[in-house]
Image (cartoon, rainbow, N blue to C red):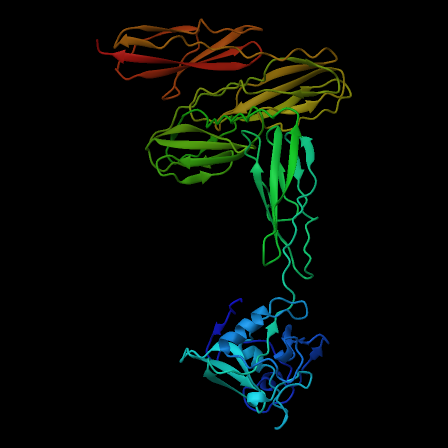
Length: 557
């Protein structure tokens, strides 16, 4: 025997829906709140009555265990045995019968009726034994040995000891719930690196009206895979296959009451596993010296990503962590003379990051300006109709802190040509050669104060495109230790260029950006014992550059 689930509530227990009583007989009854509605009960012909307003199914009369009167052969039941009786009956194919709550049973009282009629719709068969008293599942809270009943011979709700025996009318909320069935779809085979779309639309539920929710999760992935599901709680989630092998994904659906048995789908990937992402390279630019209250431009344009693109820039003041800008380039006006360090962090399209720092030295006095030098790059030969990319990156300025701007223009073009420069104010403009012949392009750079002397490059069309230049290799020599006030020789003679010659050397003191020499080799006499770092930059005959550093440790002895 199954023990019934009983409610322990006071008279003001949880509200139920309206009973469609149309007339108000006393303040507080259902008609008081729902005047004008109609009651609606349906005799199902199988010993049950459906209340279409509350969506409850009622036992018509318990006397023959099937809902029909049979001269009282079934005895009256007390509170406990009545609850067990409802739990155990099998009526109308339903198995979830129970003893009704006080409010559920009281909703059947029809106050429009007059004694000696029973106060209930005639569709119900009602016993008049024991004054038509029927047990509810609601315990009387002030005295836990009593429970509430409803009397239909007359009308009213009251409480009696639970040991008393009265009539029983069981109630059901309808059909039992059937667990849903998950269907994770058919197995798939895709290429590694592509997206897989899963399909749970074949999942089902036998109970009409139940809405399914979906929960997908990996149960296995290829070794090293970090694949994750997107929209894992929808019918069609996706994931990107990042490694070759088998991905097994499990689907569980829920009908609002119970989970389904899991179902799985296998996605097999073939082909070559994509290479691991190479992090980007951050370049915050060279350290600079600027006069206080003068604008300085900080640029991360030298940053790069060898196997993708940079999608985000973040500039932070190192001493405070304050975010200054999320742009590649931004302007900053120092208001004090303290040295400041800025940290640039770049993020590539695979989410990898890299950082670099730039030290800004702020002085009280103007910084002497030297005109910049324009370098329009090496002459080129390309096929007519193809694009030419110019390169002004070899342009320079001896004044640390000056940012160059670029201005390119044609000085001559082949007869009939209408070629125009794209991005003519950048370091690398382009144009399409529309006629055979020579295109001469002039570059002028400006350091914010003065223009450079123009420099030109010639692009000849009609010949064979030369092979790409291989950059040179810079070699600043081995790190050294020297006694203070003793001469030391710095040499870049170990530098080389595999497909040309080195045409320029530039030695710079890293901490200040000061230009020390433009010779391959030069002598230096340290006057202090601090460790110093020197940067050698070499340029080949095609304008490509490379850099190397040498650390000099200075001792007293």
